[in-house]
Amino acid sequence: MSPSKSFARPKQFWIHHTACFLAALLLLAASCSADVLRISINDAIQPVTAEFIGRALDTAAANHDQAVLIEINTPGGLVDSTRDIIEKIVASPVPVILYVTPAAAAPPPPDSSSSNPPTSPPWLPAPTPEPLIPSSSAKRWTTS
Image (cartoon, rainbow, N blue to C red; front, side, top):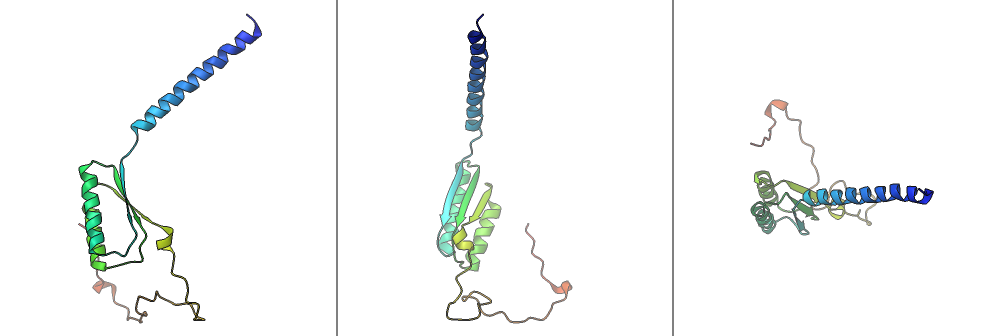
């Protein structure tokens, strides 16, 4: 046997096995795919937003999706609507992934007319000192 033929066999062997390995890897990746419903929130949180998220969670459950991805880019909103959204997320049979986009997570730019930066956002009232409350009278929030 010539040296070129003995070299060709191991090369064909590795090419064949590499191709089989890649094909098996592709089949495994195809069987591990997940259906994820993605929604984006780009406005203030309000009752319509809560309804939109509720419908998305219901749709994901009906379609047997693996998860719901909620991208949030909002300056804030109504507390009652936020609580309604949280209740819907907690009650959902589908796992929920929340992603706060960098634009929503960034603080507002400082006021250039003031030499001192604001201590709280302009839409919140200025903080007032409150007396310390003994721990026995503190409220404890639990989820059931």
